[in-house]
Amino acid sequence: MAVPDRTIDPKILENAKKEFLANGFEKTSLKVICDQAGITTGALYKRYRGKEDLFRAVVEDTVNDLNAVARQRGEKDASLMSDQELIHAWYMDPEDMMWWFRFLYKRRDGFVLLLKCSEGTAYSNFQHDWVEILTEATSNFLREAQKRGLCRKDISEMELHILLSSFWTTIYEPFIHGFSWDEIERHCEIVTKLFDWHEAFQFRCPT
Image (cartoon, rainbow, N blue to C red; front, side, top):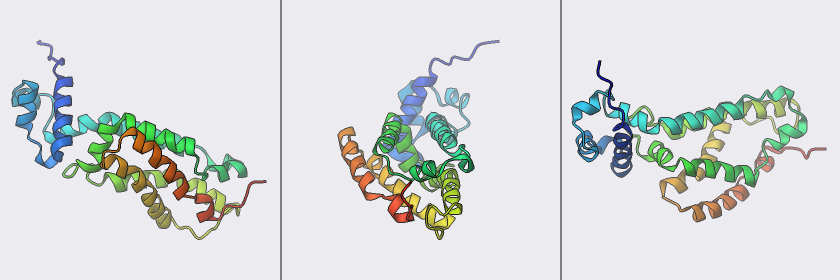
């Protein structure tokens, strides 16, 4: 039995990424991708069921990395955290904020594809869906703090989602608009000053 030639796969994915970034999913042509990769459409269909399957392959690593971080950050049992830990969880830490921007900048192409080039795919609603994932991952920390009387108790799940949507919009937009790393560093400093969760949720000072 002949062994499939996988050496052309990276070339297919690289050309697909370039076309998706330039044109978005819906306007991207598989024929153009194949021509640039130097393969036939038949060779592409042996590897991918169609254009959306190819798009999924291009963003797969980015999606997996994002989901892994969300799981890691949300798996801590809030009931086992001290009051100080719960309060600190909502501190706008500049170093942690910069970590997020570095993490996303290293995956910039995949992140931009999800943000602005995915219309017509299963990721069309990525911006909303990602905030939903993070709302679920972080709401337990807020609920536990509310239970202990550490912060205001009238923040609903929906309001938390809305607030996190606003917060993440300030992270999405620099990538959508093609900020350089220097611009992102400056932007990060502004964002950490703009969002004060302790003030908004009226956390009491740790003792």
